[in-house]
Image (cartoon, rainbow, N blue to C red; front, side, top):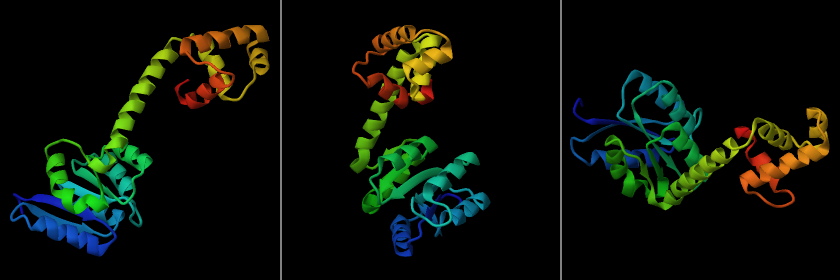
Length: 217
């Protein structure tokens, strides 16, 4: 067992779990495979024994796969985490990547891809199921867009940032002017300057932008 790759499969469907275990154990001498039927049990097993790879189903009782992965990260475990899921859900995918999950595979592709996924993550690389590779492209595109917007926001003066923040709180120019002890005309001039710096146009474009970027202000 010392020379084998130690793998933990956590899934509340015993037939699927057993099938995956049998598949991995068909490779002689390579894998030692343990099983858990929920996330909480898996975590307790991982606290008692070090595993090289943990394969978590997202939907599990007591502790789901993403919460179990987050707890592994909190505990600074070295185990490489692979997520299995039935859902092509971009929000779940982004949360998994944020946590630090190394592999992300759809259950419908698990039999064909799991060995390659395990080897890839053991080599320190990420494995994303090709069927959802578009999520990764969207994520990278959104990150670039956010970075570009952060650069634009840094171009604003402190006063302009404050006005944009107040706009994100649904305050009108009249309310902002009263709060800042200036004229409405001054606020309108600032709003125009903000629009020019951020390159946004349209009647409600500034309000929409302020709402979308309120966390950055």
